[in-house]
Amino acid sequence: MIDDWRAYRLSPPPRGYQWVGVGGDYFLVAVPTGVVFQVVIGR
Image (cartoon, rainbow, N blue to C red; front, side):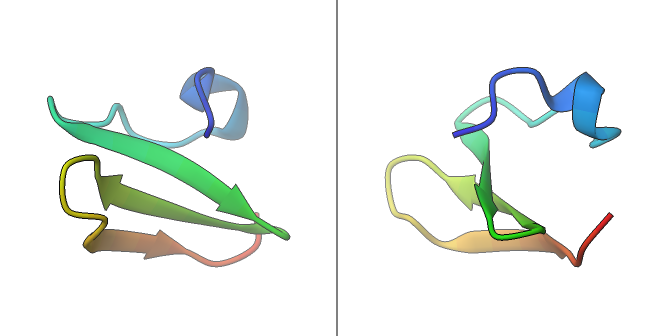
């Protein structure tokens, strides 16, 4: 999980969502379901 999303130049996650980093990519994931809402490819 990415708690400091500002350091990665990501948008603030809406309530109930969390940024997750995998390799050099970032996924905005709904916490209760695990559904991916947004993908940011390698920054």
